[in-house]
Length: 374
Ligand SMILES: [Zn+2]
Image 1 (tube, rainbow, N blue to C red):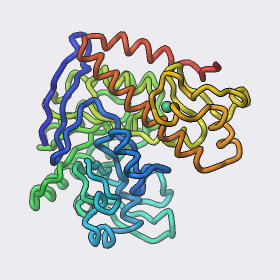
Image 2 (cartoon, rainbow, N blue to C red):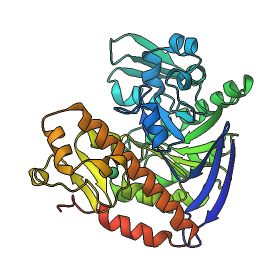
Image 3 (spheres, rainbow, N blue to C red):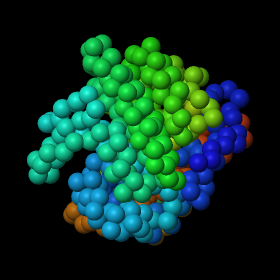
Image 4 (cartoon, rainbow, N blue to C red):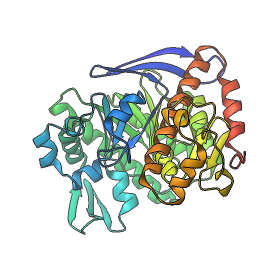
């Protein structure tokens, strides 16, 4: 992987860069749409190409359970399976074990869990999740870590750090033993305790990972703690490697991430909210299910250049949501991902022209208030 910083904001840690992943070149800061089970819900691979995304995310936990590694091996990996020609990042599956399963148990060298689908028993280790990600064939693999809830006791937080650091070393060993073109990112933890965060950042940064990820943030902690941790660690991150803030994707959170040096984001929010009838526009969020759009022949966002806004009225899309037509979900998802792509592009341009904080203030103002009511 080649990562190169291209512009740095003189007033903050915001920067633009180029990330090159096995032949796919993309600009950072970047937002990655989430394709949990080998598809970005309601969209086709050609829709993602049309939207000009170059990096998407798949979930190891889900893909391991279904279709499973034997099918993925048979097809030569997920990219061939879904005919995706650009880059792919996979998480380690650890977070889904922790968030989807009431029945899981950490052990010294791994985590035992039961499938949320059929209750079958499984065991993930730092090495096995790398092997699964090799079957998936992602360009960026993530390590198995122990994400403790943000309100954990000091003892639980200590345990999370020790386990996360031990597993990080085991992951590097396993990865380097049989190295191919797949890159590996480390994840640091530490909850909302800045001292623990710094300790974990230093432990993970000392290992030869291709990139560093912030885990265990945006997991329900108060927003002021989220900001405090980002501001606390930002100046101490390794600027030679890309910094990835996992699971973050609201407009205000992306702005604060970029301001503190983050290069990569992923989140289900733009796609999940679209299916629930909430779309992002140049004037703020709007709820398509609202009665007030019933007779409007305007597009969802008159300032949006996406093919949905060019063709369909908000009144029509509101109707499709209202009656539960599945086309409502794909049209709204396409628009929201077009919005996210344009939003990140505007952020990059503002960094390059030295006006990042102006863009920051504009979008913060639009997205920290309730829905735009027309
Ligand atoms: Zn649009």
